[in-house]
Amino acid sequence: MSYYFLCNDDISYDGNIKDHDSVFIGVGNYGWFQALYEAIVVGNKFKSLTALDSNPSQLEFFKKVYNYILKSNTREEFIGNLFCGVFVNDKLTVDVDKFRAIYGLNAYIHKYGVVIDDDNLVGGFSKYIASPLSMKLKRSEGLYVFSAGYNHHFLSSDDSFNAFKVAINNIPINIIEQPIEKCIQSALLDDMYLHNVVWVSNLFSKYFMDKNTKLTEVYNLMESYSIQVAPKFPEMRITIMRDQRKKIAISESFGNSYRIMSVHTKAFYKVAKYMIGKNNVEVTNVQRWINNQKGISKLNRCVMMHPKEFKSSAMLFDTVVFHILVGHGMVKKDFLLLCKIACNKCKRLIILEHNSESPDFKGKNIGLSSSELSSLSPIKQEFVGGVSCSDRNHVFVIKGDK
Image (cartoon, rainbow, N blue to C red; front, side, top):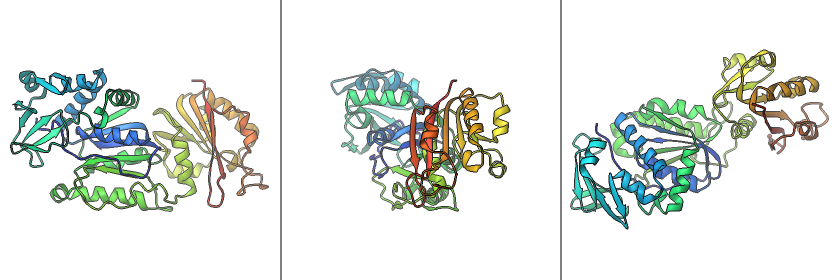
Protein backbone atom coordinates (compact mmCIF):
# COMPACT_ATOMS: atom_id res chain seq x y z
CA MET A 1 0.00 0.00 0.00
CA SER A 2 2.97 2.33 -0.54
CA TYR A 3 2.26 5.75 -2.05
CA TYR A 4 3.18 9.38 -1.60
CA PHE A 5 0.85 11.31 0.71
CA LEU A 6 2.10 14.69 -0.55
CA CYS A 7 4.90 15.81 -2.87
CA ASN A 8 7.64 18.44 -2.79
CA ASP A 9 7.50 19.43 -6.47
CA ASP A 10 8.15 23.06 -7.42
CA ILE A 11 5.18 23.82 -9.68
CA SER A 12 4.43 26.68 -12.06
CA TYR A 13 2.92 27.10 -15.53
CA ASP A 14 5.62 28.20 -17.98
CA GLY A 15 3.98 27.34 -21.31
CA ASN A 16 3.12 30.13 -23.75
CA ILE A 17 -0.27 28.65 -24.70
CA LYS A 18 -2.81 30.30 -22.45
CA ASP A 19 -6.52 31.04 -22.59
CA HIS A 20 -7.16 27.98 -24.78
CA ASP A 21 -9.74 25.22 -24.85
CA SER A 22 -7.75 22.41 -23.29
CA VAL A 23 -7.62 19.04 -21.60
CA PHE A 24 -5.49 18.23 -18.55
CA ILE A 25 -3.66 14.90 -18.24
CA GLY A 26 -1.36 14.15 -15.37
CA VAL A 27 0.34 11.86 -12.91
CA GLY A 28 -2.17 11.36 -10.09
CA ASN A 29 -0.14 12.66 -7.16
CA TYR A 30 -0.98 15.61 -4.90
CA GLY A 31 0.89 17.90 -7.30
CA TRP A 32 -1.78 17.16 -9.92
CA PHE A 33 -4.16 19.51 -8.11
CA GLN A 34 -1.55 22.24 -7.74
CA ALA A 35 -0.50 21.99 -11.40
CA LEU A 36 -4.12 22.07 -12.57
CA TYR A 37 -4.77 25.20 -10.53
CA GLU A 38 -1.77 26.97 -12.09
CA ALA A 39 -2.92 25.97 -15.58
CA ILE A 40 -6.42 27.33 -14.88
CA VAL A 41 -5.13 30.62 -13.45
CA VAL A 42 -3.43 31.56 -16.74
CA GLY A 43 -6.75 31.18 -18.56
CA ASN A 44 -6.86 27.65 -19.97
CA LYS A 45 -10.44 26.37 -20.19
CA PHE A 46 -10.48 22.64 -19.50
CA LYS A 47 -13.05 20.35 -21.08
CA SER A 48 -11.81 17.18 -19.35
CA LEU A 49 -9.36 16.06 -16.66
CA THR A 50 -7.37 12.82 -16.46
CA ALA A 51 -5.34 11.42 -13.57
CA LEU A 52 -3.16 8.40 -14.28
CA ASP A 53 -0.85 6.20 -12.25
CA SER A 54 0.25 2.58 -12.24
CA ASN A 55 -0.13 2.47 -8.44
CA PRO A 56 -3.75 1.80 -7.35
CA SER A 57 -2.98 3.05 -3.84
CA GLN A 58 -1.78 6.37 -5.22
CA LEU A 59 -5.03 6.74 -7.17
CA GLU A 60 -7.13 5.84 -4.12
CA PHE A 61 -5.38 8.64 -2.25
CA PHE A 62 -5.97 10.94 -5.25
CA LYS A 63 -9.72 10.23 -5.00
CA LYS A 64 -9.67 11.07 -1.28
CA VAL A 65 -8.03 14.44 -1.96
CA TYR A 66 -10.50 15.16 -4.76
CA ASN A 67 -13.46 14.39 -2.49
CA TYR A 68 -12.00 16.38 0.43
CA ILE A 69 -11.78 19.42 -1.85
CA LEU A 70 -15.41 19.05 -2.93
CA LYS A 71 -16.80 18.58 0.57
CA SER A 72 -14.75 21.26 2.36
CA ASN A 73 -16.11 24.80 2.69
CA THR A 74 -12.78 26.50 3.43
CA ARG A 75 -9.11 25.77 2.88
CA GLU A 76 -8.65 25.31 6.64
CA GLU A 77 -11.43 22.72 6.65
CA PHE A 78 -9.76 20.97 3.71
CA ILE A 79 -6.43 20.76 5.55
CA GLY A 80 -8.22 19.44 8.64
CA ASN A 81 -9.96 16.75 6.56
CA LEU A 82 -6.73 15.85 4.75
CA PHE A 83 -4.77 15.38 7.99
CA CYS A 84 -7.64 13.79 9.94
CA GLY A 85 -7.70 16.59 12.46
CA VAL A 86 -8.30 20.31 12.91
CA PHE A 87 -6.38 23.19 11.34
CA VAL A 88 -7.02 26.69 12.71
CA ASN A 89 -4.79 29.77 12.58
CA ASP A 90 -1.91 27.75 11.10
CA LYS A 91 -2.05 25.25 13.99
CA LEU A 92 -2.64 21.60 13.16
CA THR A 93 -4.02 18.96 15.50
CA VAL A 94 -3.92 15.40 14.10
CA ASP A 95 -5.83 12.32 15.20
CA VAL A 96 -2.94 10.03 14.31
CA ASP A 97 -4.87 6.81 14.91
CA LYS A 98 -7.55 7.96 12.49
CA PHE A 99 -4.83 9.04 10.06
CA ARG A 100 -3.23 5.57 10.14
CA ALA A 101 -6.60 3.84 9.76
CA ILE A 102 -7.79 5.94 6.81
CA TYR A 103 -4.53 6.05 4.88
CA GLY A 104 -2.91 2.77 5.91
CA LEU A 105 0.39 4.59 6.48
CA ASN A 106 2.92 4.25 9.26
CA ALA A 107 2.83 7.76 10.75
CA TYR A 108 3.54 9.63 13.95
CA ILE A 109 3.06 13.20 15.16
CA HIS A 110 5.64 15.88 14.36
CA LYS A 111 5.63 19.59 15.24
CA TYR A 112 5.10 20.42 11.54
CA GLY A 113 2.48 17.72 10.85
CA VAL A 114 3.17 13.99 10.67
CA VAL A 115 6.19 11.88 9.83
CA ILE A 116 5.45 9.14 7.30
CA ASP A 117 7.78 6.15 7.35
CA ASP A 118 7.59 3.77 4.37
CA ASP A 119 10.61 1.73 3.24
CA ASN A 120 8.86 0.58 0.05
CA LEU A 121 8.48 3.96 -1.64
CA VAL A 122 9.98 4.46 -5.09
CA GLY A 123 12.16 7.55 -5.45
CA GLY A 124 14.39 7.48 -2.40
CA PHE A 125 12.08 9.10 0.16
CA SER A 126 11.36 6.34 2.65
CA LYS A 127 10.75 8.81 5.48
CA TYR A 128 9.49 12.38 5.23
CA ILE A 129 7.43 15.03 7.01
CA ALA A 130 3.96 15.77 5.65
CA SER A 131 3.00 19.31 6.61
CA PRO A 132 0.26 21.77 5.70
CA LEU A 133 2.68 24.68 6.00
CA SER A 134 4.83 26.79 3.73
CA MET A 135 6.61 25.11 0.87
CA LYS A 136 9.71 27.25 1.60
CA LEU A 137 10.60 24.82 4.37
CA LYS A 138 12.40 21.98 2.56
CA ARG A 139 14.09 20.01 5.38
CA SER A 140 13.70 19.61 9.14
CA GLU A 141 15.70 17.38 11.47
CA GLY A 142 17.28 15.66 8.47
CA LEU A 143 13.95 14.84 6.85
CA TYR A 144 12.46 16.31 3.69
CA VAL A 145 9.26 18.28 4.17
CA PHE A 146 6.41 17.55 1.74
CA SER A 147 3.88 20.37 1.96
CA ALA A 148 0.16 20.54 1.22
CA GLY A 149 0.89 24.08 0.02
CA TYR A 150 -1.20 26.12 2.44
CA ASN A 151 -1.07 29.77 1.24
CA HIS A 152 0.04 28.56 -2.20
CA HIS A 153 -1.66 27.36 -5.40
CA PHE A 154 -5.34 26.45 -4.86
CA LEU A 155 -4.86 27.05 -1.11
CA SER A 156 -3.68 30.64 -1.58
CA SER A 157 -6.94 31.98 -0.13
CA ASP A 158 -10.49 30.85 0.53
CA ASP A 159 -11.50 32.55 -2.71
CA SER A 160 -8.93 30.59 -4.72
CA PHE A 161 -9.92 27.37 -2.96
CA ASN A 162 -13.62 27.80 -3.62
CA ALA A 163 -13.06 28.86 -7.25
CA PHE A 164 -10.93 25.75 -7.76
CA LYS A 165 -13.57 23.56 -6.11
CA VAL A 166 -16.26 24.89 -8.44
CA ALA A 167 -13.98 24.39 -11.45
CA ILE A 168 -13.11 20.73 -10.83
CA ASN A 169 -16.69 19.91 -9.85
CA ASN A 170 -17.86 21.06 -13.28
CA ILE A 171 -15.25 19.31 -15.44
CA PRO A 172 -15.51 15.57 -16.26
CA ILE A 173 -12.68 13.56 -14.75
CA ASN A 174 -11.16 10.23 -15.87
CA ILE A 175 -8.92 8.04 -13.72
CA ILE A 176 -6.60 5.58 -15.47
CA GLU A 177 -4.73 2.87 -13.58
CA GLN A 178 -1.82 2.42 -15.98
CA PRO A 179 1.78 3.65 -16.24
CA ILE A 180 2.16 6.74 -18.40
CA GLU A 181 4.11 4.86 -21.09
CA LYS A 182 1.14 2.55 -21.71
CA CYS A 183 -1.68 5.08 -21.85
CA ILE A 184 -0.30 8.47 -22.86
CA GLN A 185 -0.66 7.94 -26.62
CA SER A 186 -4.37 7.03 -26.44
CA ALA A 187 -4.99 9.79 -23.88
CA LEU A 188 -3.46 12.39 -26.18
CA LEU A 189 -5.22 11.14 -29.30
CA ASP A 190 -8.60 11.19 -27.54
CA ASP A 191 -8.43 14.99 -27.72
CA MET A 192 -5.85 15.68 -30.42
CA TYR A 193 -7.64 18.86 -31.53
CA LEU A 194 -7.56 20.47 -28.10
CA HIS A 195 -4.56 21.91 -26.28
CA ASN A 196 -3.17 19.12 -24.07
CA VAL A 197 -1.61 20.19 -20.76
CA VAL A 198 0.40 17.24 -19.40
CA TRP A 199 1.61 17.13 -15.77
CA VAL A 200 4.58 14.75 -15.50
CA SER A 201 5.82 15.68 -11.99
CA ASN A 202 9.46 14.55 -11.86
CA LEU A 203 9.16 11.65 -14.33
CA PHE A 204 11.36 13.45 -16.85
CA SER A 205 14.17 13.81 -14.31
CA LYS A 206 17.42 11.92 -14.91
CA TYR A 207 16.70 9.61 -11.96
CA PHE A 208 13.44 8.27 -13.38
CA MET A 209 14.44 8.35 -17.05
CA ASP A 210 17.54 6.28 -16.23
CA LYS A 211 15.39 3.92 -14.16
CA ASN A 212 12.71 3.52 -16.87
CA THR A 213 13.89 3.93 -20.48
CA LYS A 214 10.25 3.89 -21.67
CA LEU A 215 9.96 7.46 -20.34
CA THR A 216 12.34 8.62 -23.07
CA GLU A 217 9.93 7.11 -25.60
CA VAL A 218 7.06 9.01 -23.94
CA TYR A 219 8.99 12.26 -24.24
CA ASN A 220 9.91 11.58 -27.89
CA LEU A 221 6.29 10.72 -28.77
CA MET A 222 5.00 13.94 -27.25
CA GLU A 223 7.71 15.95 -28.96
CA SER A 224 6.93 14.42 -32.38
CA TYR A 225 3.23 15.27 -31.98
CA SER A 226 4.29 18.85 -31.17
CA ILE A 227 6.64 19.20 -34.16
CA GLN A 228 5.25 17.26 -37.11
CA VAL A 229 3.15 18.91 -39.79
CA ALA A 230 0.96 17.59 -42.62
CA PRO A 231 1.13 15.09 -44.24
CA LYS A 232 2.20 13.69 -40.86
CA PHE A 233 -0.55 13.74 -38.26
CA PRO A 234 -1.50 14.56 -35.58
CA GLU A 235 -0.39 18.19 -35.39
CA MET A 236 -0.88 18.89 -31.70
CA ARG A 237 -0.42 21.63 -29.14
CA ILE A 238 1.08 20.17 -25.97
CA THR A 239 2.30 21.96 -22.85
CA ILE A 240 4.42 19.98 -20.39
CA MET A 241 4.21 20.88 -16.70
CA ARG A 242 6.88 19.35 -14.48
CA ASP A 243 8.78 19.74 -11.24
CA GLN A 244 10.73 22.93 -11.97
CA ARG A 245 13.73 21.71 -9.97
CA LYS A 246 14.39 18.95 -12.50
CA LYS A 247 15.91 21.10 -15.22
CA ILE A 248 16.14 18.80 -18.20
CA ALA A 249 16.01 20.45 -21.60
CA ILE A 250 12.41 20.65 -22.83
CA SER A 251 11.98 21.29 -26.56
CA GLU A 252 10.65 24.70 -27.53
CA SER A 253 8.06 22.87 -29.65
CA PHE A 254 6.07 22.17 -26.49
CA GLY A 255 3.57 24.93 -25.88
CA ASN A 256 4.34 26.68 -29.18
CA SER A 257 1.11 28.55 -30.00
CA TYR A 258 2.62 30.08 -33.15
CA ARG A 259 3.37 26.87 -35.02
CA ILE A 260 1.91 26.80 -38.54
CA MET A 261 -0.58 23.96 -38.94
CA SER A 262 -2.49 22.57 -41.90
CA VAL A 263 -5.88 23.93 -42.95
CA HIS A 264 -7.49 20.63 -41.87
CA THR A 265 -5.99 20.77 -38.37
CA LYS A 266 -6.92 24.43 -37.87
CA ALA A 267 -10.52 23.68 -38.86
CA PHE A 268 -10.83 20.71 -36.49
CA TYR A 269 -9.32 22.75 -33.62
CA LYS A 270 -12.17 25.24 -34.09
CA VAL A 271 -14.78 22.48 -34.26
CA ALA A 272 -13.46 20.49 -31.28
CA LYS A 273 -13.68 23.40 -28.86
CA TYR A 274 -17.45 23.60 -29.40
CA MET A 275 -18.16 19.86 -29.12
CA ILE A 276 -20.03 18.61 -26.06
CA GLY A 277 -20.68 15.15 -24.63
CA LYS A 278 -19.24 11.74 -25.45
CA ASN A 279 -21.70 10.52 -28.09
CA ASN A 280 -20.89 12.42 -31.26
CA VAL A 281 -21.04 11.96 -35.04
CA GLU A 282 -19.20 13.53 -37.95
CA VAL A 283 -21.40 13.58 -41.06
CA THR A 284 -19.50 13.64 -44.36
CA ASN A 285 -20.53 12.90 -47.93
CA VAL A 286 -17.01 11.77 -48.86
CA GLN A 287 -17.33 7.99 -48.47
CA ARG A 288 -13.58 7.56 -48.99
CA TRP A 289 -12.91 9.41 -45.72
CA ILE A 290 -15.28 7.12 -43.81
CA ASN A 291 -13.66 4.02 -45.32
CA ASN A 292 -10.12 5.23 -44.61
CA GLN A 293 -11.00 5.97 -40.98
CA LYS A 294 -13.04 2.75 -40.61
CA GLY A 295 -15.98 4.83 -39.43
CA ILE A 296 -14.11 6.41 -36.51
CA SER A 297 -13.65 10.18 -36.66
CA LYS A 298 -10.47 11.98 -35.65
CA LEU A 299 -12.68 14.31 -33.62
CA ASN A 300 -13.16 13.54 -29.93
CA ARG A 301 -15.40 10.57 -29.09
CA CYS A 302 -16.98 10.63 -32.50
CA VAL A 303 -18.11 8.17 -35.20
CA MET A 304 -18.55 8.93 -38.90
CA MET A 305 -21.67 8.60 -41.05
CA HIS A 306 -22.67 9.32 -44.63
CA PRO A 307 -25.68 11.70 -44.84
CA LYS A 308 -27.92 8.86 -46.06
CA GLU A 309 -27.02 6.69 -43.07
CA PHE A 310 -27.39 9.62 -40.67
CA LYS A 311 -30.79 10.57 -42.08
CA SER A 312 -32.20 7.06 -41.62
CA SER A 313 -30.59 6.41 -38.22
CA ALA A 314 -32.72 6.45 -35.05
CA MET A 315 -29.67 7.33 -32.92
CA LEU A 316 -29.52 10.50 -30.81
CA PHE A 317 -26.27 12.42 -30.32
CA ASP A 318 -24.70 15.02 -28.08
CA THR A 319 -22.95 16.75 -30.99
CA VAL A 320 -23.46 16.41 -34.74
CA VAL A 321 -20.72 17.83 -37.00
CA PHE A 322 -21.46 18.53 -40.67
CA HIS A 323 -18.12 18.35 -42.48
CA ILE A 324 -18.13 20.43 -45.70
CA LEU A 325 -21.33 18.94 -47.13
CA VAL A 326 -22.26 21.65 -49.63
CA GLY A 327 -18.60 22.14 -50.51
CA HIS A 328 -18.53 18.47 -51.53
CA GLY A 329 -21.63 18.52 -53.70
CA MET A 330 -24.77 18.50 -51.50
CA VAL A 331 -27.41 20.90 -52.87
CA LYS A 332 -28.55 23.70 -50.57
CA LYS A 333 -32.15 22.46 -50.29
CA ASP A 334 -31.05 19.02 -49.11
CA PHE A 335 -28.52 20.60 -46.74
CA LEU A 336 -31.15 22.77 -45.02
CA LEU A 337 -33.48 19.76 -44.66
CA LEU A 338 -30.64 17.74 -43.13
CA CYS A 339 -30.00 20.58 -40.66
CA LYS A 340 -33.58 20.28 -39.41
CA ILE A 341 -33.25 16.50 -39.08
CA ALA A 342 -29.95 16.93 -37.20
CA CYS A 343 -31.40 19.43 -34.72
CA ASN A 344 -34.06 16.85 -33.81
CA LYS A 345 -31.32 14.31 -33.06
CA CYS A 346 -28.78 16.28 -31.04
CA LYS A 347 -28.01 18.81 -28.35
CA ARG A 348 -25.64 20.73 -30.62
CA LEU A 349 -25.07 20.96 -34.37
CA ILE A 350 -21.73 22.27 -35.64
CA ILE A 351 -21.46 23.18 -39.30
CA LEU A 352 -18.01 23.30 -40.88
CA GLU A 353 -18.53 24.58 -44.41
CA HIS A 354 -16.60 26.36 -47.16
CA ASN A 355 -17.25 30.11 -47.24
CA SER A 356 -18.42 30.94 -50.76
CA GLU A 357 -17.40 34.60 -50.20
CA SER A 358 -13.76 33.88 -49.28
CA PRO A 359 -10.96 34.52 -51.79
CA ASP A 360 -10.46 30.75 -52.04
CA PHE A 361 -13.98 30.10 -53.36
CA LYS A 362 -15.51 33.40 -54.52
CA GLY A 363 -17.15 33.06 -57.96
CA LYS A 364 -16.67 29.27 -58.01
CA ASN A 365 -20.13 28.32 -56.67
CA ILE A 366 -18.54 26.36 -53.83
CA GLY A 367 -19.85 26.41 -50.26
CA LEU A 368 -22.31 28.79 -48.61
CA SER A 369 -22.30 32.46 -47.67
CA SER A 370 -22.73 33.87 -44.17
CA SER A 371 -26.20 35.13 -45.03
CA GLU A 372 -27.28 31.70 -46.27
CA LEU A 373 -26.20 30.10 -42.98
CA SER A 374 -27.52 32.89 -40.73
CA SER A 375 -31.09 31.72 -41.32
CA LEU A 376 -30.21 28.74 -39.07
CA SER A 377 -29.96 31.08 -36.04
CA PRO A 378 -26.48 30.12 -34.83
CA ILE A 379 -25.50 30.69 -31.20
CA LYS A 380 -21.86 31.10 -32.29
CA GLN A 381 -20.12 31.68 -35.59
CA GLU A 382 -16.54 32.28 -36.69
CA PHE A 383 -14.18 31.75 -39.59
CA VAL A 384 -11.27 29.34 -40.04
CA GLY A 385 -8.38 30.55 -42.14
CA GLY A 386 -6.78 28.83 -45.11
CA VAL A 387 -3.30 29.07 -46.56
CA SER A 388 -3.82 32.51 -48.09
CA CYS A 389 -6.93 33.91 -46.37
CA SER A 390 -8.45 34.19 -42.90
CA ASP A 391 -12.02 33.25 -43.82
CA ARG A 392 -11.78 30.07 -45.92
CA ASN A 393 -14.33 28.11 -43.86
CA HIS A 394 -17.33 28.82 -41.64
CA VAL A 395 -17.89 27.27 -38.22
CA PHE A 396 -21.53 27.70 -37.19
CA VAL A 397 -22.79 26.38 -33.85
CA ILE A 398 -26.53 25.71 -33.56
CA LYS A 399 -28.53 24.60 -30.53
CA GLY A 400 -30.23 21.25 -31.05
CA ASP A 401 -33.65 20.23 -29.73
CA LYS A 402 -32.52 17.32 -27.53
